[in-house]
Amino acid sequence: MADIFERLVKNYGPIGQHRERAYGYYAFPKLEGEIGSRMIFRGKEMIVWSLNNYLGLANHPEVRKIDADASAQYGLAYPMGARMMSGNSTHHEQLEDELAKFENKEDAILLNYGYQGIMSAIDTLCGRHDIIVYDAEAHACIIDGLRLHPGHRYVFKHNDIEDFEKQMHRATKLISEQGTGGILVITEGVFGMAGDQGKLKEICALKGKYEFRLLVDDAHGFGTLGKTGAGAGEEQGCQDEIDIYFSTFAKSMASIGAFMAGPRVIIDYIRYNIRSQIFAKSLPMPIVLGNLKRLDMLRTMPELKEKLWANALRLQQGLKERGFDIGKTDSPVTPVYMKGGVEEATAMVQDIRENYGIFCSIVVYPVIPKGHIIYRLIPTAGHTDEDIDLTLQAFTDTKQKLDAGAYKVEAIPDMAEAR
Image (cartoon, rainbow, N blue to C red; front, side, top):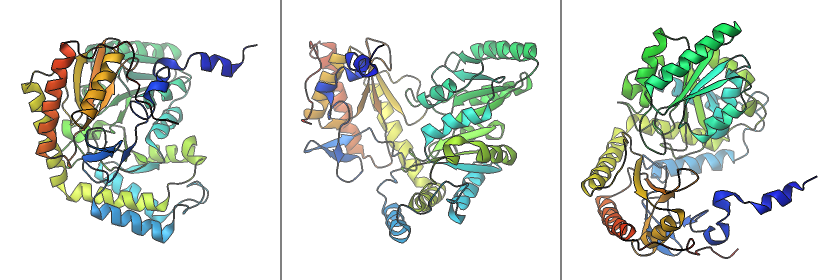
């Protein structure tokens, strides 16, 4: 019999194998100081492009005040217990009601975390005879939710409606042969890596041709897209056709938690059957009151979204003018595509941080194919024109070095902090 621990330490995985050189720098870095477009990393001020703080609410004075006042009044323990047993409150219900109205749905349910919540929702909605059809670039939380599904699942090529129809035909045929079951389609409002919106309108238009229900993960669209900020469904004019709308508070609201909104009878079914909420402690009151305030600001301060988009478009246009490939993004998410290996990518990260004062996230294998690098930039309402201009110059300089082979190294630079 093999020792499980022995197997694990022999292979730490494609990222973990670099832990001794990466910890505290490339992996698990520590940003310090006030949350904003500039923070401190290892004693140096950096322009930060790695925070999902789209509307700049994380450190807004009004948000800080409500968070502090609610914590002083209730502490972090109240209410105690799971919602169903002893952890409910009028404020929890108020937040659900306001979210439902904002998303033009009948009802909504709060979730402790987005990742955990959508996984459990998939498990709750689908039985073993049901079929799930999903986009190939769906977020990891959706993929993990699919692993819980005991029935069939078919994946369609990313945003490829022709392939979507092919998979729908397969799913419909199998349902007919089984004589039981239904189809759940899962896609995203905005794909967080590439920044492109899901083909929601096109998928919804096929509801007359195929019988299915649609679940949309709109973590990056909520608060950033649509006339009111209600998300990708509003942006594309098909919000009413989305059966279950999901989003997290971790992006535009700069908070913790998530929600799902949809028909009252279905949300109520989820409320009484979703294991991750039934067997988990309720969201603490300061989080709930803080999210009520954030939602109010999202609805009543359109200038925040306008500033976000002004910054996003300035950054994206500047990158394109300098010859960078930013793909097909039509959201604030700004990927910058380059060629190179893991070692080159980390050497470039070291240079852009140490010599240019730019902190941004980099994506390499195994998240994307070998030989490719993605810088993933997240503009916010808090960034300034100076932040953007300095970043554009830094990218221009380091891209020239990358193309000239200046970052060719044997191994990733050892920047680990002592533990």
